[in-house]
Image (tube, rainbow, N blue to C red):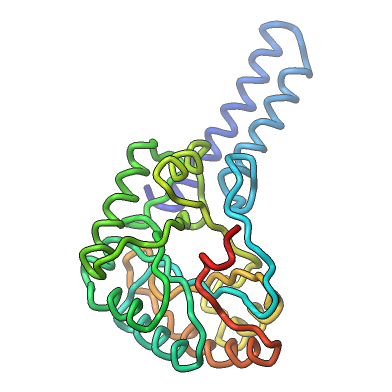
Length: 261
């Protein structure tokens, strides 16, 4: 389901919950009790779906505040234009990142995933094809996990780290439980960098600098999950200054699994 269609569908679910409250109040003469509860429930549904760190649909992974450590994470790759550059540069500076990869992208470029491992980085799961999971059944979520696992294993000889980041951070009420049943932890992030909106390398550096502190989890992108091949050159261009800022604060990027409680 496309992004806008998912937004509309989830809005429709919330509106349906609220509308059901109005109908019940009219049927039972209880206004405004049921409609008030339904309005709160509809709002809670939207928060649980779209707020990546909300605990309403199950608690996502918590991150430890470790002095001198933070984690750079990259979604939607690997991409042959940017992933090798990012991977090699971070390794050359002594920083390690976690790459939340897509199974389809790994299957198409298995050498890129293998290089990430060779450079000392961590590979985790972003699902198979970047579909939004707000309305996906548990079996569909399991399929996303399994296909991504297969692609990573075939490319690297090892399974991804047991960490999962939902595309766009969008969740269903049963996503966390399904991931946990399959051995994965749901991972969010800190701050709002929005490098995919192409605000310019300087803006990306500034936004990351605002959240750079021990235990910070920074979300960036080395690929385009939509499949349209959008450029991530600004993210790559921002990386040297991001690393400089981290070094100046005595921070080293480490694989995210080192910070997960």
